[in-house]
Image 1 (cartoon, rainbow, N blue to C red):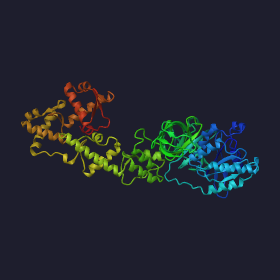
Image 2 (image 1 turned 180 degrees about the vertical axis):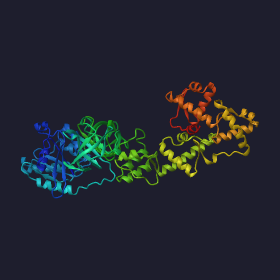
Image 3 (image 1 turned 90 degrees about the vertical axis):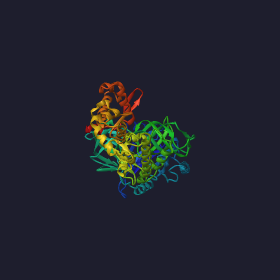
Image 4 (image 1 turned 180 degrees about the horizontal axis):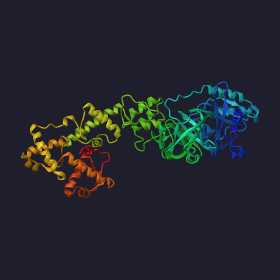
Length: 633
């Protein structure tokens, strides 16, 4: 169990920890000289009866060091709020209480210290004042212990209470949670190398494991471990941990970074959270307010956007988005504390819902429904609700990283390429594809259908490609749509040739192939094949509907092999010109006249290989048109 000591400067935090553990947490020369804690201090108390040990985090009380206090408070299981009997509650007492409450530390006690420096009546007055101070906070109703580290008064009762808390501390099962430790110190030990310390927030780690340092992309290996100040083979959530690392120098590690399992490695500069404004604030919180965001052992400037209301009033809770000046490590359910822009006053706190927050559509009812799903407590229920709420599906790999745990398959969801789409959204997406195809056939009766990439742009432009491909495969498997080459069409739109049309098609095929880049006109083919022009035109149109010919302009036809060759030239020209193709460049590459070159490029625009932008044509990066035909050729 990790217990934090908090309170105003010189109210006896370090002295109390030394009395309980025998360890002086003021380790820096400057701390010894000034008699105050500047950095976080750590000490450990063995529990002979219960087994195990309690880790104490002694946080500094000076107002300028509240950011260090917040770093220490993150990850605490319980807290001791200290109030000196000769002083009573002071400004940092109140701010530390706010920090503990906003971080969700609901288990703790008040310790009235220096009882030997005040008479009994004054001590009781301070006890009453401290109890009143707790009203409306997470520690309301917490027990109060009156102690003197000098005389030993009350220490046995406090030790007994701490032991009882440790015995009832639930050890969270791993449950698929990825390992994460918030780094608050890094140093070098002779013969060991780089060592980092921090509080383990989730999962477990063993010697030999590989971890990622985030923000950043360094990969390190764990050489050895200490947990609760003892050498161990494995460390787990809820422990103070020191890790000796291979693969990184001390100078490459900064306080505020995280060491995490590779599957959970992510960093963000924009996160959605549930936020409560401290009830003691004088004014409501509005969008655009600059703040200092504390998460883990890090602190970064940012701004708040209130998502589900105009203003966040004191004591109220709302959904917000935090936009940060730089990237930090953050995961679902991490506790976050906000101070004002100058970092002089604690104003709000809450927990992260989504560390991968969107820039756009952040206030829509749809997005708020997704945040409602992410607020659910049970992981499997939360994931299932999110998949059911997300209109464009969920990236399961990114979700697993953001959740800091493995994500189980969601029953009934369409899956593909690491994405999942809810059952209701899948039904809607199928309907959109079929409606888009019906509209295309009505508008372009002489074409077999759009290619798969163009159909996606027509029907489901925001759906991730992996999900669209899975949806299309399911539609084809069900017989709802048909695929010929790269072209998709409704089964009823397939065109059958009559016996005479089959005969004419066979006669025209070699002449179409011989026409080369110039293409073949219907009247010329009719003449050369000895067939009537109307029958030839009808046959060629039906072949174009079937996807077996391309009609570039009225009555001008090309076989697929020739068009695949021309498409290959387009791709080569585009590759040499930053993705752009001009009529002049294509004309020179094919030795065609300008008019015919323009006609072919405009045909490629219509069928989705190119996109007209001003005077140039840009190659569509998602188009797969002609790739199979070209390879076959």
